[in-house]
Every structure is written in structure tokens, then in C-alpha cells.
Amino acid sequence: MAVFRSLLVLAFAGCVLCKFGAPFEPCDKDDVKCLITAIESFFVKSSNGIPDIDIKAIDPLIIPELKYEVDPDMGLLFEFKNINVTGLKNQQVSDFQWASATKSTVLKTKAVLNIVGDVKISLTKNNKVFNGVYSASYTALGNLQYGVSLVRKGDFAYIDIEPEVNSCEIIEEPVISLDSGLQNVIDNDADARALKPSFETKKVTLRKNTLCRVTEAAYATVIQNIKTITKVYPCLAFFNNMCY
Ligand SMILES: *[C@@H]1O[C@H](CO)[C@@H](O)[C@H](O)[C@H]1NC(C)=O
Image (cartoon, rainbow, N blue to C red; front, side, top):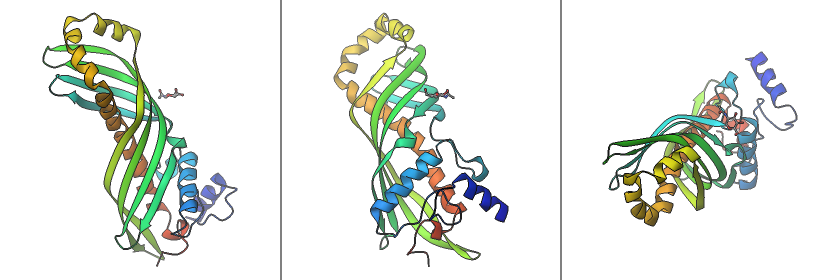
């Protein structure tokens, strides 16, 4: 354990006040600014993953598969493969609140994301499938709520996190593009063209909904990393004044 810790200390050298070699400094629980800085620095320092402690890479982050029924009425189904999400390491934390009374925390983030992935677009009512590459640039707000409790293990108390709510909002209109081959096939397909007027009336909402599913899938890894880091380092590595 000592060797393991000193390796981590080397990995995050320069962090003068860090405890137990954690990649961030401990904060007072009410010092929101300090907490936000610690969380943002954790996203940056762990963006390529830290395999020794099972922290997964978040930038780029690959979502192997994602199926989403974009609009059941229109019969529009997207099946993504290998979505490459970039931008999570620079996500900004807009709020982090620890509510000891309710034993819950709220973490609000804003991220400018770029994604690119293979997509299979199905018009389920027409039994038609189009394959190609889907890209998007957009700004996502994440709103995560956790239940938090302290669990004693050995000499130290550890923070135990239970995700409760994970919601997403896409602000501003996302920029979407399909590769030219796919776009061309869709533009020239009679069934796809018949759906176009109805798609146009709600496309911003449909696109935002689709991108929120992608963002939530990406945030699952971000949340997993937060859960992992609180298992690796005791509460004292995160907080000065609530670890009893
Ligand atoms: C994901 O995208 C980034 C940025 O375009 C690129 O550098 C990286 O190689 C891609 N990763 C994979 C696995 O395709």
C-alpha cells in the first residue's frame, strides 16, 4: 500500500496540500469554490484514465453502443456504434452543494462536447435502413444528485455515493452533420423525404433529446469514476471537516 501511495504521489506531484496522494486537495464542506476547483482538476487529471485505480478515460470517451427511438410516431430509430465523445475533461462545474441534513449532494456541470460515431438510421414503418457517420457539436448541462453517507473501513471513514438523479439539458441549437454519402441517400429517398416536413417541425427537440441520451451515457462513466475515487481515498482526502 505504501509503494502504491508513493506512486500516486509521484503521479500527482505538485499538489502540496493533497492528502493520501489524491489528485486534488481537501476542502471545507461549505467552501463551494474549493470543491468546484477540486472536481474540475480531477476531471482534467483523470481524463486519460488511471488504470491502477480503475478510473476510466473520459476524454475521449467511447460509447460502444446506444440505441434510441428518436420518434415512435414517425418510426425513426437511431442505433449508434463507437460514439467518440470529446470535451468532458474541460467540463465546468457550475454548482456543487453538500446538504448534510438530507445527506445528498448536487453537482451541476456544463460541457462543450463534440461527438462522432457510426449510426444506423431506421425508418421502422418503411423497413428502411441507412448507414453512415453522425457528428454533433453542442453544449450540455448535467444535473447530478447523489445520496451520500459515510462508511467506516479500517482506520478511516469513506464516502459512499448512491446516484439518484442524472438529468441533462442541451442549451442552444446543436450543430449536427451526417457524412455526405448518408445525407445524399436520405435526400434522395422517397420515404425519408415524405417524413421531412414532420421532422423539420420538431427537429431541434428531437436532436436535443438524442444528444441528451448520448450525454447521459457518457456521464455514467463520469459518475462511475466519482464513485471509484471515493472508494480509493478516505473522506479526509476530500473534506477537512465532515469525516467523522
Ligand atoms: C476520438 O476523437 C479524438 C478527437 O478527434 C481523436 O483524437 C481520438 O483518436 C478518437 N479516438 C478514437 C478511439 O477514435
